[in-house]
Length: 379
Image (cartoon, rainbow, N blue to C red; front, side, top):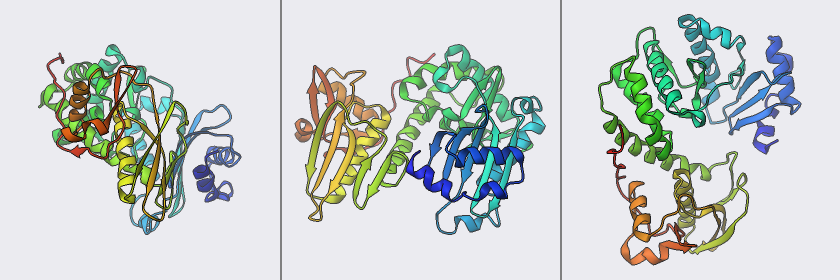
């Protein structure tokens, strides 16, 4: 099991004796015995699939930031809010309770919470085609009619179960007893589209909008929403790229150095060098940001820092798909993501292999406002 998961489970070592629910007790025993399937882990949150027949999803929450556990004394903790939101949705849509017969929560202390719900099988975002996307759009409108909204929405948090669209993570959701206002609906739309890759956004957005408009009128055009979602995606991935500076499932910072733990060291291994330590960290995070975009660039693996300030970055060259056939195409594609390369540094930035161009060194990139992709192909 991942070291972060073991560390977090250690905070729940006596939890099985504190839990009152039989289902929660069984799930916790499985987790402590290492029987659960790890789905997600961070410094504060562990998500497992567990149970005698792998029929439960178990979340353990133990915030470590200063003061956060104590704030749970005067506000509902994250997992308590999630449980409460499920109860609100069950009241408005009783049929969902048949899909989720088990939904339990217990707060063991201000800094430790446990949440369990039934495991759900259905179509995830990677399985959506045009027909499924139209159903998703229609049911997305239904969620808004129920008063649901989620400022932290990700496409991977929506599951299509038959004709029902279920939000899988309600920790940051907002649920009220009246339809969601237009401003929140637009925010949800932008969050949903921004969480898709550019290719999937172009594929699914028209069907999603058709389905939504079949149930709920929209106050904005598809093209405008796509352009805004593109800019939001660039901003979100820029923020997300900074995860490499923190201890997570994928990265292990050691002082000023960084080691990537969940990426295989394979392919063409290359190295970059520099003399300013802060520049090395920035180069690492820029390469990771481009990787999150799916842009053909070196994939950062390790940053080694020396006391003198010199740094060495080790990276690998992943498969270049789709390949960029010219330097001008590479530069234009990069401009869409909000980066430009000064002409005098072009040769030091780009490299070529087997006729395909890729970004090798991001030190000379300048950040600019992202240019939205053309929306003329949308229908």
